[in-house]
Amino acid sequence: MRLKSEIWVKAYLRGCAGQGAAAVVVHRGDTDAGVIFIKIAHLNGIADLYGPAPAGLVERNDREWVPVRTAAPDADIDALIRREIDMDRDTWVLEVEDRAGRHFLDDWLSKDD
Image (tube, rainbow, N blue to C red; front, side):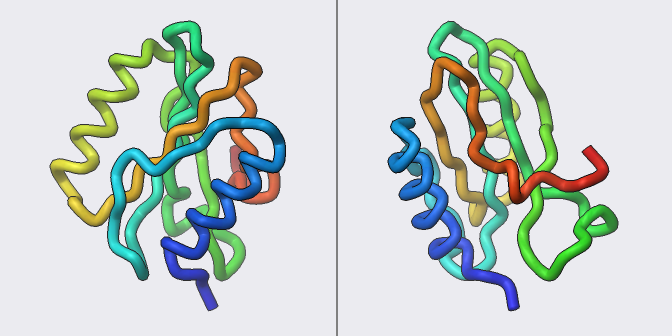
């Protein structure tokens, strides 16, 4: 059974905090099944964006992520996020601030990536 989006988000934010990275909810989506995007801000004008793996790539009955865009200007990532929210208001957006660019998704990345 898949965890509700809100529960997964809370656990992810707590994990980031435990590793010393600031992480916040930028846009709150649907509590139960909202899609989650994670922006990793490197704090130098560059960011990465991770989004849900396409259904065909998901191997387990849980959430998996793939890089959507990496090493891109913050403004480009923010524009992409705005488009996603415009298409689906139930989308969650999390932002992690970490100079090292850690995404904290090691166990959640799709194996095809």
